[in-house]
Amino acid sequence: MSSPASSLRAARLEARIAPDVLATVKRAAEIEGRSVSDFVVNAVRSAAQHTLNEAQILRLSLADQHFVADLLAHPPKPSAALARARKAHKKLIRSSR
Image 1 (cartoon, rainbow, N blue to C red):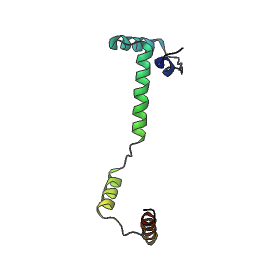
Image 2 (image 1 turned 45 degrees about the horizontal axis):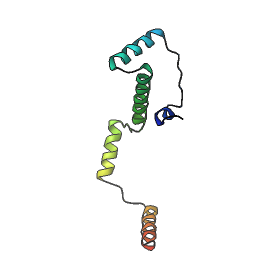
Image 3 (image 1 turned 120 degrees about the vertical axis):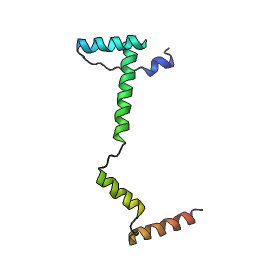
Image 4 (image 1 turned 30 degrees about the vertical axis):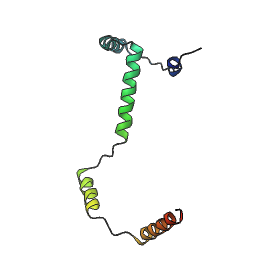
């Protein structure tokens, strides 16, 4: 019977790394008082989370930042289609109550 902790570590990841990189990883793991495996898993998780977080950030040029700020400060008049959609939405919301 496996424990909950062992079932969480069911997947295996293998990688080939240069001996000098392995020596660096081993030394870093020793400094943190971790196993090499735990150190690598933590480092990979951190790097992956950083990549995912960076992918969620929208980066705009200075000109685009000014353009967006101006649109927020001075929104254009709603188009006829948007006005109709808003009216239909309000009617739908009222009828569902």
